Amino acid sequence: MKTFKLYSISLLEGKDGNVHQKMIPIEDGLIINMENKQQTWYIEAVISHDYYDYFKKVKEQEGHMLVDVIITSKDNHPAAMITSVQTLTKLSESVSVLLEAKLALKKDVIIEDVLKDLVGQGFSEEQLLLEFKNKMENLAAHPQGALKTIYRSIVESGQYKLQ
Image (cartoon, rainbow, N blue to C red; front, side):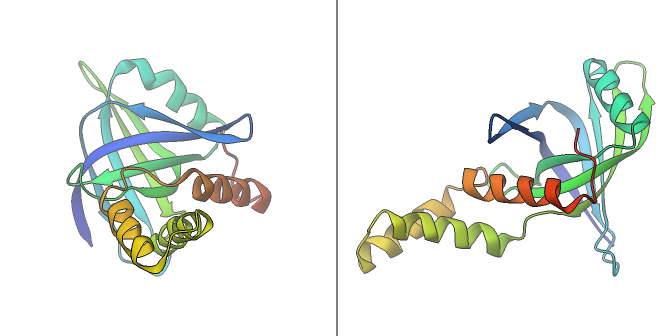
C-alpha cells in the first residue's frame, strides 16, 4: 500500500459531445494505492459543505463519477479515475468524502493521444520530437480526445452509472 498527498481533484462531466472539467477546491486530501489485484485506489478529500448534496445524491443513487486527480505536486500528470462514493462525513466546517477508485486512463493512452495529435499536425521528425517533449512536460490535463474516448467507453460499457 502506498499513500500520496492529493493535490487536486476535478469532476469530468460529459456534455454536448465534450468532456468538461469542474474543479473541486480541496482543503486537504490523500490518495491510497492499495496495490491489490483489483487495482483499487482510495481518495479522501476534505471539501466545502457546498458539495455535500452533490456527493450525497451520487452515493444514494449508487452512481459513479469520472474524476481527474493530481498527486503530490501541480507539476505531476493527472490521473483519470472512475470513482464511487463510499462515505460522506460532515465535519464542523467542511465535508470529508471517501471515494473508491480505479484508473480509467493509463499514461500510455495519453502519450499515444499526444503523439497522434502531433503527427496529424504534420511535424517533421526533429520538430515532432521537440513538440512531443514540450507537450509531455507541460501536460496539465488530459488531451480532450483521450477524455472523450474514455468517457464514451465508460458509458458504453454499461458497468458504471455516471452522474
